[in-house]
Length: 560
Image (cartoon, rainbow, N blue to C red; front, side, top):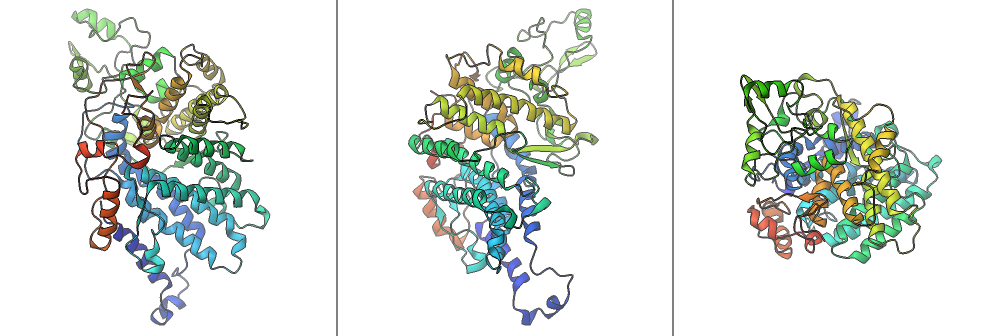
């Protein structure tokens, strides 16, 4: 990891270049083609775009190589952790925070700054969104003093503890909600379409802020369930509330962005396959997302004639009478079931034919321009389904405390399922990948909601809510990892949806490299305060030495 000094120093140089002494920059002052005060609207656009586009390497090196294997959303051959993970940290300090702070600086220095307060509040919401993701895998981080190098020549920011970070973020979100909810919009300037997510719809920004409060609440629960309940209640009491529709969720679409490139980078090093526990559950429940998430194997068409002609039988783990035989998952840990794992990298040879038996993750769903295809990349940043499942979870746990939750746990659960299916279908349609339906899909969705293994029946309702959240998070790997880490679900030995045996040790955090002499003292203090072994990239340490909000969480698969 490159030092925090670098990421605070670069913006300072930019600022000095743009706003330095006029005595030394006469040419700049007289040449109108040189920008000395960047337009805050485009600063926001850049930060919003960077929120997603830095993830090109994250998808390849972090999500599919590691997080999605740990959560058992995908299976592939194991790969050791490398310095290619944790790009979220550098991206926050170099690509996002400087622009957001510059927006606020320019607004504060305006004589009519009161007309720009909504624009200012949006920067805090966007900042908190990425900062939560940074702390998820790093714990303490520079925040309250981060960025002061630009304006106060301070290059040794302290590392705020995680409990302080969450307190700060809740305050910032509450302030943003209050301002955006009460300010007369007709008197406010806006980003207009330069706001690529919400086009300056302040109500949707309030909804996002409330959903981020729920993200914080679920993370705090294992440390302070009462605080989590209080945050949940405050969100439900807010006049606007959290994300409450597909239209209000935070979506990203970019025709030129290709996180896996235009070739076969999604297959880099290893094809990623479906895990049998997930594939089997989705088959058993007739989940409409099955065809969206996974590709069909080669057991289609006249394969049976070829088998009969050559006297070859399918492996024992495949039921020849399975009506969905063309979807097969592989073991999450290849060492546990080597007889199945062999077919993850090798086909079944039948005469001159070769049949690959295990279903890969739907590659066009993630990489719509793979091998010259013409689909468009769309992704979900903060979703309605995620919001619904958090609310359903908290109601089921009795955290409402008499607050009007605007529906029961079942109501929110069903809305979450419906939105997840619609959203995944929309992403697939945009990517020109396999879809589950055309039209509104309502009949298909209702059939799934009412399936006996999906509908809440009073016996294992919380587990069913958890599993639907887990299925949804296949497209949000960081949230999927946080979910599995905080809940311990899917649960080992569950008769409903089990976590498979997984002998590989799972790191519960990443590491932060020594930032260099300029801020080594604060870094070492933060590492020691958290009980981390400084400079260690050993998986045993990364598993045992947990970040603060993870300290009371169960082991993977050991949920209650």
